[in-house]
Length: 113
Image (cartoon, rainbow, N blue to C red; front, side, top):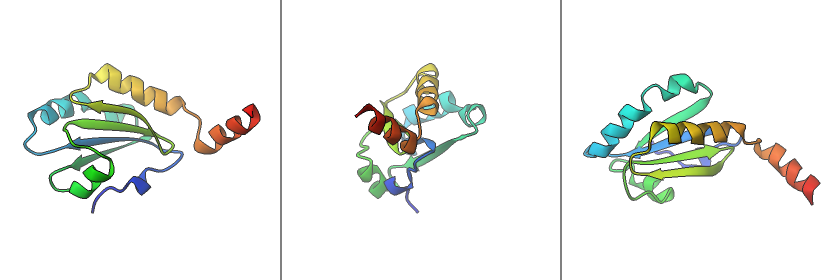
């Protein structure tokens, strides 16, 4: 079963790691990501193999591996193509956790108008 963009939910922080079995850089990125799930228990981490789930890779417009996407409240806030430094990944996750929820952001936008 593939990961669909519809599954990127509001009020959720998600990190989606696109990889493939034959990708050496993907193995390096996995090592850099090791322990992130424990550090950020409220963040959903997913891995998609683009060789076995071509449809999802196409839906997210991912052509290279490793690619890591960070979503906050249904909105893509970071995209890393290639190996990403752990500090940069943690910064993106921290930024995502500090973003207001979709409803809160809409209310802020209305008030500003």
